[in-house]
Length: 480
Image (cartoon, rainbow, N blue to C red; front, side, top):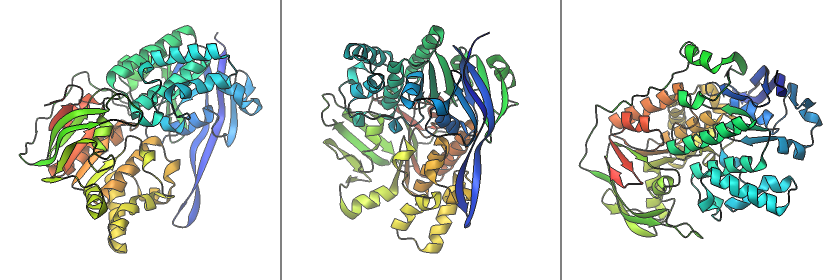
C-alpha cells in the first residue's frame, strides 16, 4: 500500500460578509476530508463557488483552516517551518500574477530554488530545465510585465518545476494557455507523475484526453465532497453528477451575420514593449465589422491581448493607425473617456480591474462616472448583476474573496452596467464551469443579436467556431 503524503481531516473555512446591514458567515468549506498518496495524481472538480480555490489556498499554506487538520508527510501544517514546506509543496494558482515576484522571467523562476539554499550552479540548471519544459527559454530575459496571461502561467508553472517539490498543486493552471501549450503542459505532468511526483489538479477542463493519466477524481459542491472515485467511474457517471463532457466534433455557427460597416479599421499596427527586441504586434491589418461577433485566436504570446488593449486606448499607438467609426482613435481627454464607455474591455485576469470593497461598488463605478442618477444607477447595477447570473446577495460581498470564475462574472457585469456598443472580452470562459459558460455565451449571443459588436480573444476553438461570425487568426493574419 502506498504511503499517504497529504491528508485533510475535517477541514472547514468561512468568509464573513454583510448583506442588508446584517453580518453573515459563508461556509466555503465544510468538514472536507481526503488523502493523497505518494505518486498519485488527483483531480478536484466542482462548479464555480464550490470551494476549490479556498481549498487550494489552505493546501498551499496561504490561509489556515478554521477547523480540522492539514497533514503533510505525517506532520501537522502548523508544525512545519514555512521555508521547509515550500520545498515539499508547490502551488500554481489560477491567477499567475498573484505569485510572480521578480521583474524578469529568469529571476522569477529562480526564486524558489534560491530560497531552498541551493548553490548557483544547481539553481541555473533548474531554471534552464524548467524554462525549456514550458517553452519559455526565449523569454528568459524578458520583463514579466511584458508577458501575456498565458505566458505568465507558463512562468508560474516553471517556478514550481524548478523547485522540484514532492507535491505539485495546480488551480486551473492551463486555463489561459493555447491548445498546443496545454498539450505540452500535460506531457510535463505525465512525466512528473511517472517520476513519482504527487499531483493535485483543480480544473474545469474535463476532456477525456486530459484525464487519462489521472488516478482519482473528487467533486466538491457547496464546500463539501459529494463524490470520490476513479477516473473511469467519473466519466461513466459524469452526466448524473452535473458535468458535460465536450464533444469531439466541433459545431459551427449556422446563423452567421454579415456587415459592410467597420466598427474598427486597424492598419499596419505595430507595437513593441520597452526593453524587448521583438515586436508584440507587427503590421497587423484587420477590419472589425459593426454588429458582428469576432473571435481572435492564436498561440500564447502572439499579441492577442496587446491588440485588443489598443482598441480602447490602453496602449498608445506606436506605429500604424486605428480608425473607429470613421475617425482616428482618440488618445486623451473627453473623447477618450467616451470611447472607453462605448468600448468595454474585460481583461484576461479579472483581478486586474477589480478594486472596490463590494460587488455593488465595483459594478456601480462605471455608470456613476457616466453621470446616471441614483435610481438609474441602482437599476443598472441589478440588471448587470442578474445578466451574468449572480444573485442579489453578491452585491455586499467583497469581490476579492470570490472564486476566480465569480470574479470574472463581476468584471463582465461592471462593463455591462454602462451598456457599451462594443464589448471586448479576453478569455471570457477561463475559470468558468459549463453552467456559467453557457450563461455568458447566451448573454453575448443576445447582445450580438441586439446589434452590439462582440470581440472575444480565446483559446477555445469550439466556442469560436460555434458562436463567431468571423474568426481572425493573429498568427497567420487570416480572417475567416
